[in-house]
Image (cartoon, rainbow, N blue to C red):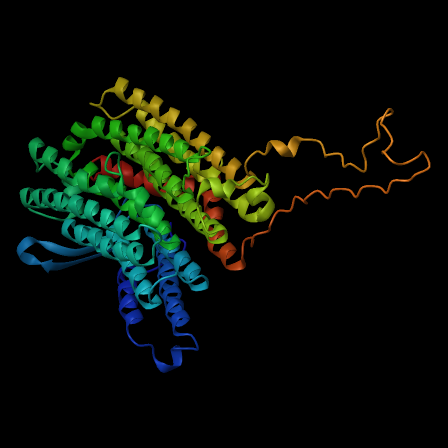
Length: 568
């Protein structure tokens, strides 16, 4: 069933346009604007160009989704297959199925919202021309990662996003931005070198780099030892990008230093590239190697869940001088741990839970970083102790709508039933309860118990953040009864008369001591452009939570086919 009947040729064009248009838009952003498009403010004109290009890509992605055959989500659609390097059998092979389509839509949506937000609130830093071009290159590389079906093209697209993100952090970031940018680029580049070796090993040993053919073969053309080496090499590169504990240490620094838009794209899109590689490449292409390392992957995943939560609890406590953006970054380590745990189960339930958690994390954490950026802009800091203050009101009293939306995003992040974050975690834990054949059930049920404990820790630190940032610190003085002024105080019965006066003398009343008014300085509440930017993320969080079949109906048939070795 398709919402709109679109011919295969148009579908091919739409997918190619989605991948290539941002790259062409980036080139156009760096060129001098035509006289009629310069406008009165060239900086605003180039930011408007970014909104136009990302908006066109989003519209094309929505049309592509409406033309997608939802009755056969396991079949690759809108495919393009052109020979590129015949000597290595490298092809320009594009296509989408039920696994990649949601990630394609998420990327197009988040990039458009970031461009729109930047238009109304331009980033502080160098020329907006470079900023717009970098965001568009980043979008092109991310979309290509989810659309290509050739191992070498996947690697090129995977690497294409590193340089734009490096400059977004280094040039438009906050304090310690250069150190954070270098840490980001070094970690990811070192991981990518190892990953390239694993991809070349698979391609050369199997005789093809085509991901569809490799998935159909399901590892039968590769020996177990080759699969084990390939999973180890590729898995390290993907784990750095995910990020998996203990390869996560670049993430908090990058998020803390990055501009708001950079944090949203890093958490909402770039982290998904690593987990997508596990599902698209390692699970179907090297199943024996994955089965060997699945217990280790699950162990690292649950350690990440607990570690990320404990780090957030440490940052959230009073006097810790924790940073709100850094806390959200550590929460991503825990949330992506659930994704890795679902993948490690190698079951349809667990992998579907991982894919659902991927999308939920992109929506919720993207919204959280938007809100954290807005709070930092208003207060001038993201320090939790400063945000909490001692007013007894904080955001609820100073910007109530902003405080309410932050509380909504926080409870969505902790996995409240009825919101998107719930289903991914629940399905992941169900998958761990009954892992794939050949995996240790006692071990995975232990991992399930640890993961479930991690959900309690997540609820604890998120509720602490809501209480402190939205409600303010508890002030013991606020519970004291109103002080009695001297003018109101009754005279004691045996009080002596003032010396030097008789009974008829009058004493002028002492003036009442004025009490300082408990005023709460107001902050700018949610602006119109912020409401337009954030509402789609909040609405989709509710939609995915109340109607999970919208997403699971796409992913489940594709996951079933992928795990069955290309057979529906």
